[in-house]
Image (tube, rainbow, N blue to C red):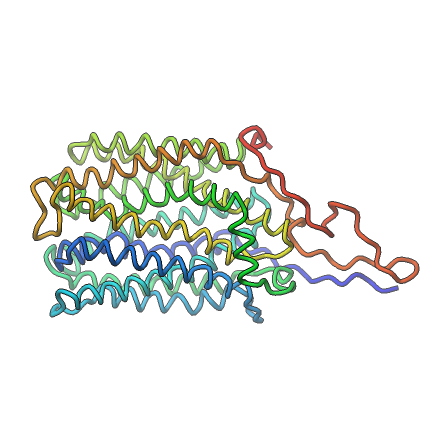
Length: 482
């Protein structure tokens, strides 16, 4: 009598070793996003209107290439897995493009400077998307159960915050004091080289340890157009994606503008951004353990809604800050809200991915996450438009032409715009429903059933894992303690 054909599952990937990959993926892109305005607009003199136009163009391009990159990852079949080859190739490419991004020749000006900025901004974002689509797709695959997933996610967000301390809080000191000066660009290039080397080493270390599940890549390769059509017809793709974008865009504004907020709104040296950023990040890191416990007791959806509200309130408080001390006090609240979003937002997205795999019988996390990345691409458009608006409303066009009140301009950029966005997100989150936790076996292809007495396969009972199980959705009532 023949036996069922089974594919052995992988060994368990240590959560800390997967999580440390977030440290490597975060350092390059956060230096880029956190310093690009200071480097190109305030020091090199790029006009904010040109900056805004480039950000809109690259956001559109990035929105188009993201689904393709995710789809190619889903279709990849190698002895090293689906995700690891992309991680091993993307890491050095991102590092090289970041170094070039912060190595603009001193002779460049006008259209030459615009083209240099545009080309390397687009390349950096494309390779960052390649890395994050594949790294993010590993989370639901390596940790099918939400409790394990929540722990791994909290650890990786903790590593991200450590990276933020380095790439955001320490970067101003390295670029303007250790490796360069406030008015020069040499420090940016040297810092980019150091960060690039660290990022490549960490990502390679993580990728070599990720034990992908063979079952996830034994089914028929998903087709691009059919998969995209299925995703865009999924209502949860739009509700979760647009609501999460309110948080993502708000934090993109904060990360890109905090150094100039310190310079103009608080009237302090750029290096003092270290203290404000450091407090926000440390509070966020400390809060991850607390928010993870709340997730375990109340569920991801209820906790996500609470974190949204806390973050919105924090920006209103930050607007009232007048010096470094009051800004740091407000930053404690910002860190608390941000920590809650870090602990929950990816869990909400992972619920949607689980439901898609259960419903369609295909694991296409790369494409789905890249499709969700379409909403994060709005970050570039909105931050570009927000910066351009400072020229329209306040006369801030560049460091050489800051207008009459750059302090108010960056107070609006860093506090008012993020408050409006997160307030909208907090309200919208109240109306979002996501599937309840899907059993790990429900989303995996079933082993062929044993033959019956006459040699014919015996059909599995409904809901046994041999056929897709329709996901259920829940609100705060279904997200109660487990």
